Image (cartoon, rainbow, N blue to C red):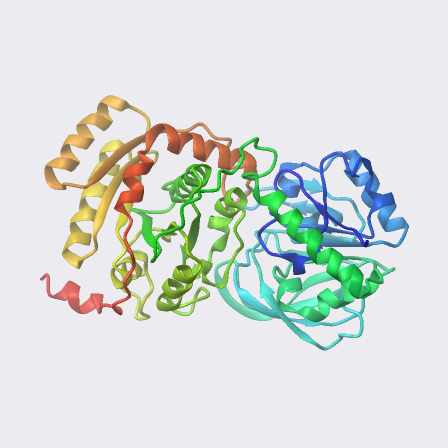
Length: 497
């Protein structure tokens, strides 16, 4: 049978998309397949996205094998971070005053630098390669999910994305999103979902390796086995096996929102930890994001091996992917046990925008989502965090938003936190209250916004949640969503005066 390898190393996202259901064999960190060197066993190699470059998880053994496959003219397909691995270098110095460069393999003569992209896009095929043969001028679809998306260099461009927004600003234009080497057998693209949403690309890949009908049947069957193997483990090389619950999820998925008093609160960290801890218990769980910045839920997808779906981003204004009412229908049809909706910035950010909805508050109220509020103590201190929590919860009650839990995060003094808890409970009577101490994380490598080493971030998140949160209580706080339409908050706020 034809064998298509799939690089399975720390930081990779093997279930982020289906890759056309083409991968048949896992390639681990030693670069072998069935005990043999992969260049002798494989007809081609798919390198998924993730944080492969940041994690530095590809050693010399794998690099040597990839170079040999390239020299033999076998196909090599790099997606996002996999593309960056094949490039010359990537400057991961976003929010750094100077470049922070990670070397690639130099198979594709381009380099990467910071440019955030998180939207669904159309892309135009502009030249031939093994992937795009005879498709020049064709439009294809997919989505971007990257922090380092600016591509410069001399490699032949094969794909250009028609983007509307990058680096959080509206800036419609055409950008390079895929290149090939001179021989056309190595291709890197930034368009996630390309093989799933555009069958002609998948067909070209199969044609390149000479796969007949029998081969394609065998590839399909082998892919099903591979997916079961991948999904049996949380993350990659974590040693955490997934327990599959025998109990069918109840009809109607329950949801809860994780919101905050501002940015850098720890929403993503806690959401990831809850998702991971519940998945360990055998629950089928998912995280979705208010607004377009889907990078925040990547760590959760890394742990629970769920795909990035069209409903993974709730639309606010003209930003994001899917309207809330359709999101609710979609998650119900997927039969999750629990869905956590991660808010954006403060729960009130965007509330006064003329576009409706444009805030997490509007989403929570429209779907009748119970909300857990998080306030960080690392900026203004524990006292300020406590007052922020109280003020937010009181305003949310006036607006009709159901605040079910309060969390003081990044606590540095338990005695002061105890006094803060007394103050909060004298004003608010939450169903659930928790304090979480400040977790020591490396400055770089633990922020989806900058650079993330997925395995470190995720394992720290699970450990923290299991130590300091009551997961059973959090699950009980969730509720079945019910879309009731959006509220005119401007009129409602005026009525308070």
